[in-house]
Image (cartoon, rainbow, N blue to C red; front, side):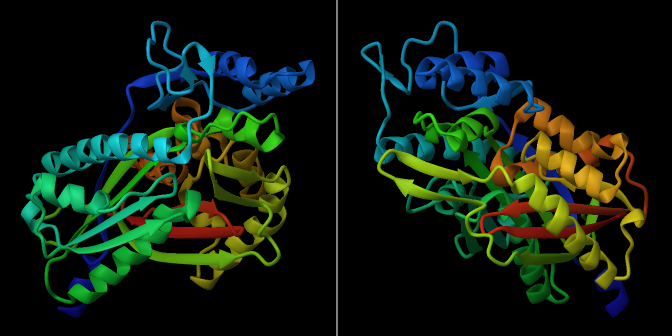
Amino acid sequence: MFTERIKREFMLIDIETASPPYKVYQNKAAEELKKRMAIRPAIGRLIDTTSLHSGIEMRSIVIPDAEYDCQEKFYSKDGNYYSPDTQYRMIEYEKWSKLLAKEAVTKLLANNKFDPSSIQRLITISCTGFFAPGLDYYLIEELKIPPAVKRTNIGFMGCAASIIGFNSVFEAMNSAKDEDMNTILISVELCSIHLQTEPTRDNILANMIFADGCAAALFSNSKEAKPKLNLIKTDSYLFKDSAGYMGWKIGNFGFEMILSSELPKIILNRAVPELICILKSHGILKEEIKHWALHPGGRAILDSLQSGLGLSDEQMIPSRSVLRNYGNMSSASILFVLKEIINSGFVKKDDYCCAVAFGPGLTMETALFKGV
């Protein structure tokens, strides 16, 4: 009985996503950004170069400003460009986070024939906005999730937060023991509401790679559930003296990003060797990992991971596809990549799948899955 329970304990049943209605192609985004930031020709060239080498073709955003026939723009007022204050941006965040989260969770439950009343744990994740009562309260009320559901909110932990959320999944499943436990983990990130137009390198990079999106994952240990993957292990690592490499602050006019140009080099020289050590500590060589869900933080980040881990172009398809078609959606991105891997149909029984993402600190979060 004990062996049977372990085999069915940490099961990823499915992932569903929701994207905003507005799409912006990189060339159009570069044109719009130059209107706001290119006070010198050199800034315009940097925007073009960043766009060209981003590995992104299109992003989904909640801001309609790039739409051809847009009448009410978020970053324009009376025909002039302006920067809304943080309060105004948070109002937009609350509206869109509710819409996208409800869409993703509704699809997730319907497609897998799960009744909302069967959910015992709800994990919400975001680093791009806050309000209270929060997204958990809204989903419980709207979807008729039991009012006694246990809730966890993971905020301001960046692109790696969804993998941090998997730790809460472990806690939920461990606490269930022999009882059924159904958990929903949902990430919603709306990076476009934090556009910063001071012409700095960090702002240009953030404006050209970050995007909006929402993803919800369902975990269950129910015997009736049909899992896509088993979650078997998570690990964390904080790199010493790395606080200046990635982070952000809450400003009077949105969140202000810090992104070091040294990140790809740090990931190649420090993160990859540590990741290999983590895998070895579990008795696994990197060559045994068939599928990789790598956070699409940008083309240079993926290039460093591919080079350091010795991965084939085929193994990079899920991560590069999400980057190309959606951009960097912060913590939601890794769920999009895992969904690509699941939907590919290539994961066989007992295949290893490793998810890797990076957060402010600099921190690295990893999750190990196995095909079922």
